Length: 477
Image (tube, rainbow, N blue to C red; front, top):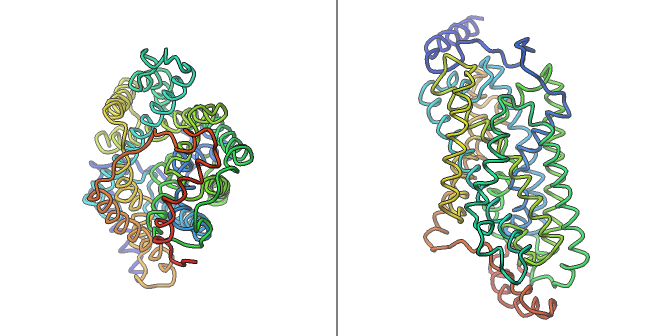
């Protein structure tokens, strides 16, 4: 009892000490069903928002992750990372309960003081900001390809303003991403999140159709069905990025009506399970279609004059536009909590100003580059892994006030070790790739699309992948 009393006293002192740094001073309880006049979501709408935040743009890279890890091991990893993600989300919310807070920043502030608060603030700002930049790049490249395809062989649109990726980014920002980002409550994004999920299902159906009528003519590359490859860590990094949702978990949790443990548990389990099924189906179908030829962006495997896949590309661009506001909500919330802690409910002028500045700077950066591969890889390892696995686990361990090696801490310790491995090894591999001078290769037409005879063209390029596949096999045949 004395130990418990000491902890409560110390906890109260922590809240007092940092009241000027964070909105904790408002004593906003995490699970309290507040009567503050703000709209709340039911479980289906909250689940749509959560699924949308999980899937994002990462789903399109899962087939490549299976190529990197090996087909059999890749499938196991998709399921395993889903289970770890589900558990880490509960660790994050448990830490919120223990610290009596309802934001990620406030939780870390209670657990690790101002140094932890500042580190978390930087990570939680950098990750969604770079994600928004990547979304704009995807939108610009994808929609531009569709416009050029619509222009036909005459290239009438290629030399017009509609064929300019910067102008496409400007239009999408002005008419779609900015208006949706100006919402003050994430609850209003629920219907758009549902539309995004419908479009993902359409993309999945399109890929299945193309497997039957197009990809079936591309023979598997040598060793395509081997169980494992040596690029396991890179595959895990891709999957961790695909499942990343922790930076906006508190926002979505606070939008749920009566967020009891049971209701939130249903939302979390259903959302992660649904996302896992989508990732598995798209990953398997995508990899089976192209095996060793699978690109980091699966849609790049399809010919640029493919009507169905051009429509799928536009659908994917729209899903990105509808995911963008969720990341903007997080970025704006981080700024508000760090710069204006004493006023958690911002006036409209400040809300609009901060939103416009965030959207403006992401648009400018995305217009300046069309190749963010190494940046995204570093963002996934340096920011995503700590946010998703390391920080929630170590916060729970610290706030529980139990012995470090107690039975209850075994799960958090394993999650933290998993995150550390992804972070360290992923960073090393990113530096190795950077040292090799790897450049961006997106937008190139695949060789089998240039030749008239699809099967013979595919056969002619398989030899280039034989040595690669065998040299990267853990279990060579």
